[in-house]
Image (tube, rainbow, N blue to C red):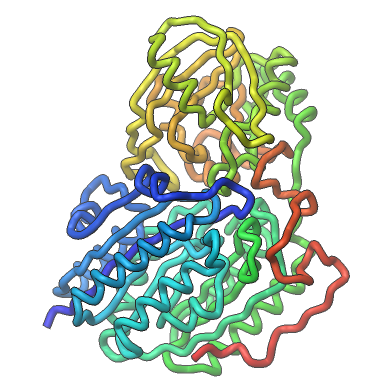
Length: 511
């Protein structure tokens, strides 16, 4: 008989220092219910981040099944989820899941680094609620972002957690596909043995690219051991700004019934990471130096173009996406031939749309912003182009996906610097965020992006590693962790407590 598989999605990366994410933000960014979930997942150009796309594809490829789609929402990265909204969402899932019983399995597309205004482990709460309804024998499989802050309760409530392997995240569909194939195996009778190690390491997000450094090495080693008794190895880098007791690196190893194999590999990988902790260090360029280099590049057309990542104001880490420190420095210095993308400023975009293409006016950035780090800035502006902000990603993290920036505008500031402004807060993933407005990226001498690292998969055919530098600016996602007033993380933790000692626990098994 075709198995009935419930589909649930809840995704939020919570920066404890950012404004609360309420229901309106979730509904604006991604909200889908019932059969529309499967219709979208099977669409040639979906909005889904990729988990449902891959899961449905795997299940379709491997035999008959009956999807039982319940609800899916995502706010990307923002502040803590408003507790009342989260509680309502969990109740919605519970009611629909009970009404759909019996089900043979549950797939949950989650992020893993959410915190609520009250509940510090929303994913653990959601997973436990699902488990309480379906019982201990129904397989529950969840995919997680590799920046997840994993709690023991999350591991206990599921049969299998599958984290992304790539950062930039270009494997969401692949991990959903892995979850679908694993679901078939669990439906056939495989029982999992799980091992979990929480490490007291708080690496900055810029030190967690998956193709280099100690993090890339740990992921590669884990994947080299998958097969035989080992079903999955997930090395989770953490999202430091969650600032909660579950914040920190994690290793989760899932085996096909072999607890000793899971335990041994989890302990080995954890020890490797702890021994390499001193290599998790950021390399940042000052704004002054970035400005100097950009002046040099703009004056020498034979020199390589430059890309600067404004990592501290990364909207993908809860940043507001609108700090103006680098832009002001470039304007003051007379930099030309560079572009900034993408700045979140709905009022400015609305004004540009009202005035129309070709209009010239004095632009006031951040007129309605209340965060003290998002300073206002005035500049003479020309409206070069406007759009509805509905795009299809060209490559990388949003490649092939429908994506909404909200109403958008390309403005030329002080006659020499270009900037793309959007209405829905996102980091800059892809060249299409600029080029749908007519701004040609390969023609630029320089680019400043509001992004921590996902831009690398969308701009890598234009900018090499040697052309990219991360800039030390202000923002809610600064990689300089000593600047943050931590209140919720468990101490001691490295590097905040550099002289601490730690050893891998003897007991890492999770029932």
